[in-house]
Image (cartoon, rainbow, N blue to C red; front, side):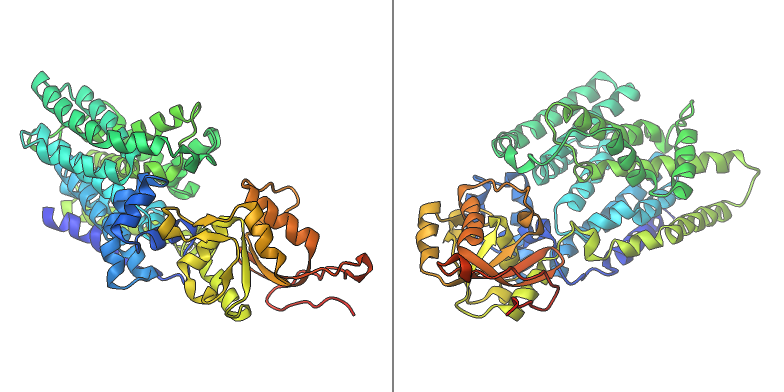
Length: 505
């Protein structure tokens, strides 16, 4: 039975993770993984000293994966496998802390949670971090039972190197030790492991702190952020959320039952895992915004453990029923939860729910309209990510503003020319294509770099728009140099989708 408790949740998670894995496009964060992980190791190492150090280990791990066959499925497959492993680890935790049926229910609940399915299909590190954090929590429970602390420290150190905010797990585990009134010798061993983890992640923390501009877009979380996270963790709809919160309340009622063979009570492990990392990160973010729900995905594992424990308490208090009947009934209840959330799971497998942009669409549009040798400007410079992720559509075009490619410059999107050099280059052009992010064409948008400011100013002042194509997340415009006489300028064409508009005769 114990072996089967992990197998079924893993199978369900694997099926959900593989369902719709190839969405026909990458969004911007996945594109960063895709293009960085295909660079040489020295190029990746150089990039990490300039930007994105927090994802450095993940990029290095993904490099051999994408060598096999660079594509969207392989890009996301490690996240699917990590989520599958996490579902099994949640089941193992529930079994060790309570009973096999608690492990089975908790693992299944984890597998059908929409937030888990979302990050199981994303080419970023968050699903791997969740797997490492859950494994470290299981190893903590084993260490408290007298097993080695070395494996615990090693797994947690690697997890923190995958994403440094996993270090908040140490505070959750410290709370577990306090709630279980661990003896002094356990505290001493845990402190040694925690010190080793902290020293391991400290260089990464110092380097990423110097790159804090990467998260300058974050804002202090408020009540809306709390409400959103509660729904992400316990149920996005009221039909699931309310029963789950009630079951968590039942699980937390005192006294807490002790686990089998002297294991700590399940709430003493699951509750700190669920609450401590998000609470600490949200609190710190009131002064220095660092919070995003994906950064604490690993804390979600605490919710299904508590929900399953609450259901188990009710089952034990009910009139005697065959154990197998109760177990199957709980599994069927999880299946009903999954069916209720099926529209959300299906919706999540569309590109419109993945950051709002599809870089494959931008490349396909460029492939239809651009020809080798055509001069192209990207506005802003990070718009170049579509050409880096899907170079086929931009093959042979002249990137007018690019001074040094991304890989050679140790940057995500390359180094651009100075405004003066770009002005000289554009002076010899009679026409230029502009690949623009939709927000970059709004009148109230203010470019951050002098070169981006010059791009917009020159095309508006010295060129006339002749054609425009729009698709999801990208605008492609053809500009021709304006004639010197003001009377020669023609009205700008209306915006179109998919087909060009020519100016009136």
